[in-house]
Length: 114
Image (cartoon, rainbow, N blue to C red):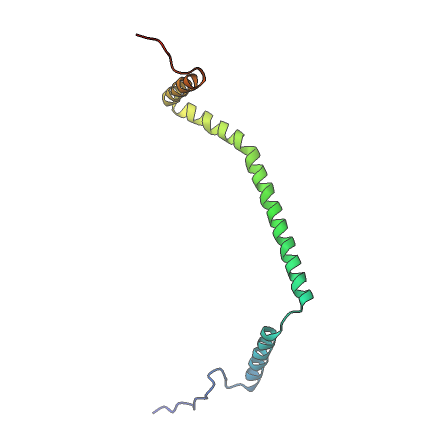
Protein backbone atom coordinates (compact mmCIF):
# COMPACT_ATOMS: atom_id res chain seq x y z
CA UNK A 1 0.00 0.00 0.00
CA UNK A 2 1.39 3.37 -1.05
CA UNK A 3 1.21 6.44 1.10
CA UNK A 4 0.81 9.70 -0.76
CA UNK A 5 2.64 12.78 0.49
CA UNK A 6 0.39 15.38 2.07
CA UNK A 7 -1.00 17.92 -0.38
CA UNK A 8 -0.51 21.62 0.27
CA UNK A 9 -3.23 24.17 -0.28
CA UNK A 10 -1.01 25.94 -2.83
CA UNK A 11 -0.20 23.59 -5.72
CA UNK A 12 2.63 25.83 -6.95
CA UNK A 13 4.84 25.03 -3.99
CA UNK A 14 7.55 22.49 -4.60
CA UNK A 15 9.65 20.34 -2.31
CA UNK A 16 12.55 22.78 -2.61
CA UNK A 17 12.63 25.91 -0.49
CA UNK A 18 14.89 27.92 -2.87
CA UNK A 19 12.66 27.20 -5.85
CA UNK A 20 9.68 28.47 -3.87
CA UNK A 21 11.57 31.66 -3.05
CA UNK A 22 12.53 32.32 -6.68
CA UNK A 23 8.95 31.67 -7.81
CA UNK A 24 7.64 34.06 -5.16
CA UNK A 25 10.13 36.75 -6.23
CA UNK A 26 9.19 36.34 -9.90
CA UNK A 27 5.50 36.56 -9.03
CA UNK A 28 6.10 39.69 -6.93
CA UNK A 29 8.15 41.31 -9.72
CA UNK A 30 5.41 40.51 -12.24
CA UNK A 31 2.75 42.02 -9.98
CA UNK A 32 4.91 45.11 -9.43
CA UNK A 33 5.34 45.58 -13.21
CA UNK A 34 1.63 45.21 -13.82
CA UNK A 35 0.69 47.69 -11.11
CA UNK A 36 3.27 50.28 -12.26
CA UNK A 37 1.57 53.09 -14.18
CA UNK A 38 3.91 54.81 -16.64
CA UNK A 39 4.24 58.55 -16.29
CA UNK A 40 2.93 60.96 -18.91
CA UNK A 41 6.42 61.57 -20.32
CA UNK A 42 7.00 57.81 -20.66
CA UNK A 43 3.68 57.43 -22.46
CA UNK A 44 4.51 60.32 -24.81
CA UNK A 45 7.94 58.85 -25.55
CA UNK A 46 6.36 55.48 -26.31
CA UNK A 47 3.79 57.12 -28.59
CA UNK A 48 6.48 59.09 -30.43
CA UNK A 49 8.50 55.91 -30.95
CA UNK A 50 5.40 54.14 -32.26
CA UNK A 51 4.60 57.03 -34.61
CA UNK A 52 8.13 57.05 -35.99
CA UNK A 53 8.00 53.28 -36.49
CA UNK A 54 4.68 53.60 -38.33
CA UNK A 55 6.02 56.43 -40.48
CA UNK A 56 9.02 54.30 -41.42
CA UNK A 57 6.74 51.38 -42.28
CA UNK A 58 4.56 53.64 -44.43
CA UNK A 59 7.60 54.95 -46.32
CA UNK A 60 8.81 51.39 -46.96
CA UNK A 61 5.37 50.42 -48.25
CA UNK A 62 5.30 53.50 -50.51
CA UNK A 63 8.71 52.58 -51.94
CA UNK A 64 7.54 49.04 -52.69
CA UNK A 65 4.35 50.32 -54.34
CA UNK A 66 6.38 52.73 -56.49
CA UNK A 67 8.60 49.86 -57.64
CA UNK A 68 5.57 47.69 -58.47
CA UNK A 69 3.88 50.51 -60.38
CA UNK A 70 7.07 51.23 -62.31
CA UNK A 71 7.38 47.57 -63.31
CA UNK A 72 3.70 47.11 -64.22
CA UNK A 73 3.84 48.29 -67.89
CA UNK A 74 6.85 46.11 -68.62
CA UNK A 75 5.26 43.11 -66.95
CA UNK A 76 1.95 43.64 -68.78
CA UNK A 77 3.73 43.95 -72.11
CA UNK A 78 5.67 40.75 -71.44
CA UNK A 79 2.49 38.89 -70.46
CA UNK A 80 0.70 40.18 -73.55
CA UNK A 81 3.51 39.07 -75.86
CA UNK A 82 3.56 35.70 -74.19
CA UNK A 83 -0.19 35.28 -74.75
CA UNK A 84 0.11 36.36 -78.40
CA UNK A 85 2.74 33.70 -79.07
CA UNK A 86 0.82 31.13 -77.05
CA UNK A 87 -2.58 31.68 -78.75
CA UNK A 88 -2.13 33.50 -82.09
CA UNK A 89 -5.63 32.85 -83.52
CA UNK A 90 -7.42 34.08 -80.40
CA UNK A 91 -5.11 37.11 -80.34
CA UNK A 92 -6.02 38.01 -83.93
CA UNK A 93 -9.73 37.65 -83.16
CA UNK A 94 -9.38 39.86 -80.08
CA UNK A 95 -7.50 42.51 -82.08
CA UNK A 96 -10.21 42.45 -84.76
CA UNK A 97 -13.06 42.80 -82.26
CA UNK A 98 -11.30 45.60 -80.39
CA UNK A 99 -10.53 47.41 -83.65
CA UNK A 100 -14.17 47.15 -84.74
CA UNK A 101 -15.49 48.55 -81.45
CA UNK A 102 -12.85 51.28 -81.34
CA UNK A 103 -13.72 52.35 -84.89
CA UNK A 104 -17.41 52.47 -84.00
CA UNK A 105 -16.69 54.49 -80.87
CA UNK A 106 -14.57 57.04 -82.78
CA UNK A 107 -16.57 57.42 -86.00
CA UNK A 108 -20.02 56.26 -84.95
CA UNK A 109 -22.24 53.69 -86.56
CA UNK A 110 -22.63 53.57 -90.31
CA UNK A 111 -25.67 55.48 -91.60
CA UNK A 112 -25.92 53.72 -94.97
CA UNK A 113 -29.41 52.92 -96.14
CA UNK A 114 -29.87 49.58 -97.81
